[in-house]
Image (cartoon, rainbow, N blue to C red; front, side, top):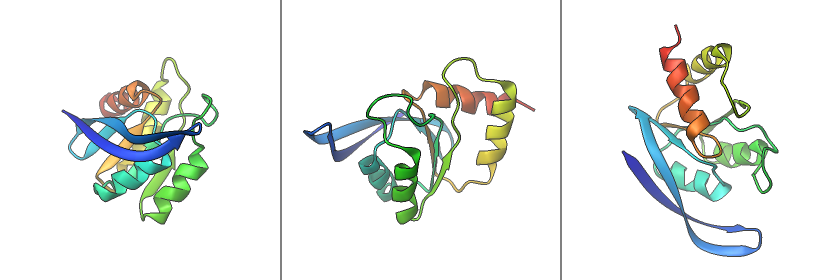
Length: 131
């Protein structure tokens, strides 16, 4: 099931009234999306999300907000933010195991994200099927 959220923010001096985030439910109270911005974090907090996990390395693409900036916003809103970067491409089994341990105790609802959401989805699926 896809969910749409709307947020207001500026990107490269271009005012956008609404940014739609496509959110897919991976498991009960576990969601995935593409890149988040600080305004999206605020909106997700209003929607009741308690934890956010970023699977993008900082500096992966131009215009990407830093994990530190997103974490600061999340923490100001009482949310937990975890930076668990995974490089694009094949995901190592050990990364999936470590990810599973990292998210196991996080409060739900939880949202994981990567550039498009695909990497975060693959990582979640691998972590669920890895013993």
